[in-house]
Amino acid sequence: MADTDMEQTKTDVAVYANGNSLPTDKEIMDGMLQVRFLHAKKQDRDYSHIFRKKSRLQLIRLSMVIVGIEFLYAAETAFVTPILLGIGLSHTFMTMIWAFSPVLGFFFAPMIASFSDTIRLQWGRRRPVLLALGLAMMAGMWILPHGKTIGVFFGDPDVPVDQMEGFRWSIPVTIVGLVLTDFDAETSNGIARAYFMDSCTPDDQARVLTTAMFIGGLGGTAGYVLGAIDWSQTNLDILGSNEATVFLFVFIVLGIGLLITLTSYREIPLPLMERDPLLRPINSNAFEAEKARQLAVYSISKDVLVDPVKPDKDANVSVDEDDDDKPLRLRDFVKNIVRMPKSLFILYSTQFFSQLGYLSYCLYFTDFVGAEVFGGDVSAPPGTPEAALYEDGVRYGCWGMAVFAVCSASYSAIIEQLVKRFSARPVYIGGLLLFSLGMLFMGLFREKFMIFIACPTVGIMYATMYSLPYLLVSQYHSKNSFEVKDGKCVPNTTKRGFGADVSLMSSMLFLAQLIISLAIGSIIDAVESNVVVIFSASIFSLVAALTASQIVYMGL
Image 1 (tube, rainbow, N blue to C red):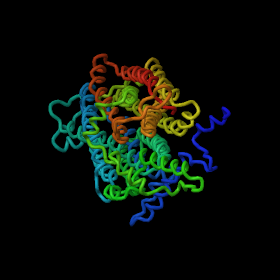
Image 2 (cartoon, rainbow, N blue to C red):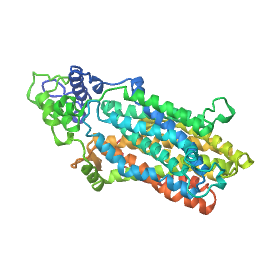
Image 3 (cartoon, one colour):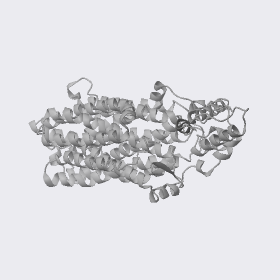
Image 4 (spheres, helix red, strand yellow):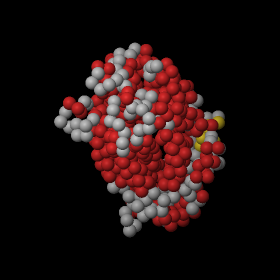
């Protein structure tokens, strides 16, 4: 046989002596999806949308809650630090308060994610949890900007910040509002992404993640622009302060986004999936079994052409009843951490250092602009030039963060094409290095123009950080491998859950936020300058780029 003929036998399409060619992997997958689509359409309730490709508009409808969440992040980033400093807290205690939410999130977010895998309600598994978290988030964002007013209602003296002393109701009330918004927003982010991927075919999962990033960037942009407006100079200063007015808009946007997402596509109830194998997602075992069945039929028959659109139902039943289909329990989640493959550990480490860099920037950026770039003072009495400069700086910082959000949305729209053209490694490392350089220059040159030069690099890093790591986890699970030897993927023999690994990725944010919250404030007070947060963002991102060079990319 000629060399070219031998190479042909190694391709995805195998040609047998009977002249019939074996369907490609894509044709087999499309056939299995078609069978499930037709079967789901015949149920009492139509679940066929789970097994069909969705348009971009339908993916936007599905992921609209992300617009509200990013809107909330924008308001938190711009105003929570000034709110906490405005009730009389030092930077040290203010940053320690930021640690409450990540402590709860690190321990309880995986438990909530695991719980959402086992809910047996007719309404589904993810949507009930997403609704509960959304309502708690909306309650928190109503409390947060009014903590001082609520404290006065309970008996706090209504005095300037420099005259506050002793116990004040405003502090615990504000903390409750912050914990409700921050913890529920981050936990909702993970649950929402699980709902998106549950509702999509494998080919649409990457599309829905990038769609969510794109519209989320637009939502963040709108949030930062709202924060940059001086509402006290308009007739729309509804609630008496910039913070309260912006959070009212966020409340409305989040409520609308949550409603659109929850009413977009119904979930298949867990009891129904347990009873009917053709309503379950197609796992790797089911796919390989169908592929092997078709290969066997082709190899023994020269007359029978198996239609890939009509696989044998019994073959799917036997595979789908495997233990891999059972929801991952909390005990399995703990085992996943203990038995973590090296490739995942490197990926999580990269995400951890990336989050350290991003949080150093975002949690204190507006405070940095108000104090270091504009020369204002958050503790100055109202009406003084220092207080006015600080408020101007906070609004100016919001414009810079709006630029960051625009760049994040724009970059998320092209990152898939960049990965296809240059591969994931240079795109991942390059995004982190750009952010590191941007923060370095902004810390060295504390000028207004540097904000609009450095902030676009934040958008590039943010889009990278919230897309490529999740696509890599999906790549590992789709190949059922976490290791490469001699250029070949080594099959994984340990049960790992995709949802659990995604949840662990989200937990890196909580861990990073905990460390930043406990450490940065004390450093700021010690050096008496918050420019340290900008330099630390640069250093952490540089370390993340170094660890990203060691990630196993598996051809992505």
